[in-house]
Each structure stands twice: as C-alpha cells, then as structure tokens.
Amino acid sequence: MDHFDIRDGVMHAEGVSLAALAAAVGTPFYCYSSATIRRHYQVFADAVAGLGDGDPLVAFAVKANPNLSVLATLAALGAGADVVSGGELARALAAGIPADRIVFSGVGKQVHELEAGVEAGILQFNVESEAEIDMLGAVAARLGRVVEISIRINPAVDPRTHGKISTGGADAKFGIPWDRVPAAFAQAAAHPGLRPIGLAAHIGSQLFDLGPVEDTIRRLGTLAQEMTAAGHTIKRIDCGGGLGVPYRPDQPLPPSPADYAAMVARVTAGWPWRLMFEPGRMIVGNAGVLVSSVILTKDGASKHFIVVDAAMNDLLRPSLYNAWHDFRALAPRAERRVATIVGPICETGDTFAEDREVEAVGAGDLVAFMTAGAYGATMASTYNSRPLVPEVMVNGDAWAIVSQRNQPAAMLALDARAAWL
Ligand code: LLP
View 1 (cartoon, rainbow, N blue to C red):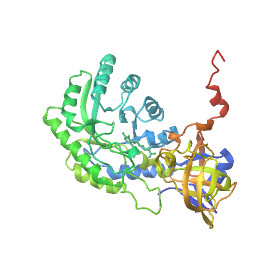
View 2: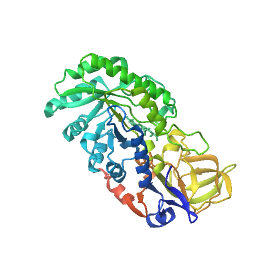
View 3: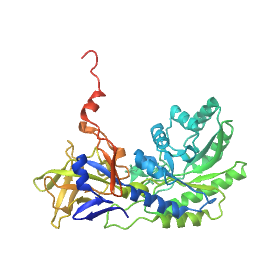
View 4: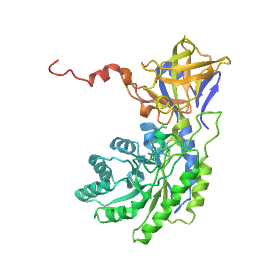
C-alpha cells in the first residue's frame, strides 16, 4: 500500500499534487511519500517484534535509498542501518541513526572504511572473508578497540530471483562458505581486538519464495549452536533483507511481512539470540515515484515511441534487469495504446518498457514511473552529461526538496583541462 492516489483528476503524493510539484521543481524528479515509508517500516517492525530474544533490530539497507531525509524519517522511528561503504556510514550517522544500531556489511570493505566503523563504535561488522578478519583484526589492534563481528555465511542456496541480484549461491562472491565457519570463528577469536559473536546471511533481493530464506535461517541456527558448543558466545543472528515488493498489478503478490515473520517465528522459536533484519526494498520501494514529462511521441516502422525526459541514467532498473515499473499519466486517460517508452539517451538500452499497453499520452503530458523509491535515485548516473535529478519528500500537505538537481556547470567544474592542452 502507498500514498500515491488520484485526487481531483491528478496523482497526488499524500496531500500534494505531483503536477504542482512538477511546476515547482521541473521534471524529471523523484518524489517520496514519508507516510508510506513510515507505514512500511512500522508494518515490518511490528511483524518481527518480540522474535528471538525479544529485541530484534531492523537495520534499513541504506543502499536502497540513502537520501538523508529518508534515513532521518526512519531514524525517528528507531530504525537501525545496514551500510556497505564509508559513504553510507557517514549518511546513517548524519541522519541520526545511533552507531549502536548500525551494521557494516560488504565484500570489499577498505581499511579506511573499517577504521571509520571502528571509530564510530558501530554495533557490528558482518565479515565476509578470512582476509577481512585479519584486516579488521589489525585495524582494531591499531586503534586499541574491541570489535564485535558476525560471520556472513554463504549458505549455497538458490534464492530463485534475478541472477544479478542473487547473492546466496555457492559461486556468489558473498560470505564465507558455511562449512568454513568454525575455522573462521577460531581465526577471529585469536585476534585480541575481535569478538566473533554472530552469524549473518543475505541470499538475494526481490524474493518471492520464502523456502530458501527458511533453509538459510535454519543453517544460521545450527551453526550458532555449533559455535556455542565450541566455546564461543553467540549474541546475534542477522537474517538479511530481500523481501520482494509488487511492481506489476497483474502478478501474484510477494509474501507479506506477516508471512515472512510467521516463518521466522517458526524457525527461530526458543532461540536466545537477538535477531537482526536488513530490509531495503520493502521499506521504500512503493514509497517513491519518478515523475517525468513526455517530450514527444514518434512512430517508427512498426512501433509507437513515447520519448520522456527521464532516462536510464535516472532509473537504471529497466535497462539493467529488464525490471517492470508501472507507467501512468499523472492525469489519467481512458484511451490506451501499445507503446515503447524510451528516454533521450543515445542507446537502445534506454528503454523503460517495450510494446506495453499504456495510457495514450502525448507531448507535454506528465507521467510517473511507479515503485521507484528503492534502487532508483541511488543508482543514477550522469551519463550523457545529464544532471542528477532532484528528490522531493512529501509529508501530508508539506513538501521539501531533499536532494538538489545538480547543474551542468557544476558537473563541468569537476573536470580540468590538462596542462598540455
Ligand atoms: N542486506 C544486504 C547485505 C544486501 O546486500 C542487500 C541488498 C540488502 C540487505 C537489502 O535487500 P532488499 O531488502 O532491498 O532486497 N539494485 C538491485 C537490488 C540489489 C540489492 C543488493 N543487496 C535492484 O534494483 O533490484
């Protein structure tokens, strides 16, 4: 459920007309509904409340939407953060997420990023390789700190999602193969500055099938028992993120947070450990849209093209994953036609939808790509020297620009003419 509805003939985000926003900030722009973000966080947090030791941590996966106001909205609700870079760590802290609710994941953390996390005093690092154990051990020793770590396992399961966002297979780059966990714990425990206190997994994103997640959480529990028997003190089990969201109204719904929590409750009944979750997409996916204008329409040999002012650099998911984003006119039209929706970028991959039946929009019409709140603005680039688009947040009848459109001149100013030119 979201808060993008047609009122008085035009799509609104909560109480604010997206057409009025387009007039104020220009297109394209992202618009986020804070009521939707709050609702989705609350639904998830309520669903998992009381599981494990009774005090689960919901650590929002910052990569899904790192905007400072999005993070601050979640911080106010008590969310933690799952970060994967020094940049995301800085954003989470700046947004007011307490360090002791931050977990640092990632397969290639650099020494300066490990140092930043240790110095900030974050809750834990999810360590993904034997080499990282030694790197972090050295950093902790140098800084004179004791750091709690979880071992992210590679559970060797098939999460049955798109190959590019599947992370749990045996050949994925993520985690330590689960049968090497005992050795990894022993290796970590030998570092005076490391305390191996937990296990973590994240098997993929946009998951519709809870079976592989269940297998993975069971594996984490078995390993936690084994590590306890081996003399280690286990405190936390991190179940990762991955719950899918509906992108297409004509397709079956993904499991709900309640379905997911019921599965976790069944698998983890009686566990004494604190449970952690890292949802990203399900918190912010439906909370954002990308608003664009139709520049022109044209007819090819056999296709009708709608050329919009947003492009693959603004919303990469259709080009990269063949992802579906619903395309709607801000002022709904009864007339429909089959069209191919493209941006202005000079490659054929700059296609949002191919031969799709959509509302028959024309030059100057305002349109929206739906469900663009997760992995939208955060994956944008400046390809074709197109400026990054602004992000706007709505809260009831109020709105604010929460990220500025960068200007071509500012982008050009980052370049320099080499002295010999
Ligand atoms: N935790 C870890 C360690 C992750 O790598 C991810 C996502 C999450 C949590 C959050 O997963 P979520 O709940 O959002 O599914 N760019 C792709 C998605 C990549 C996801 C990467 N990892 C897309 O646009 O579909």
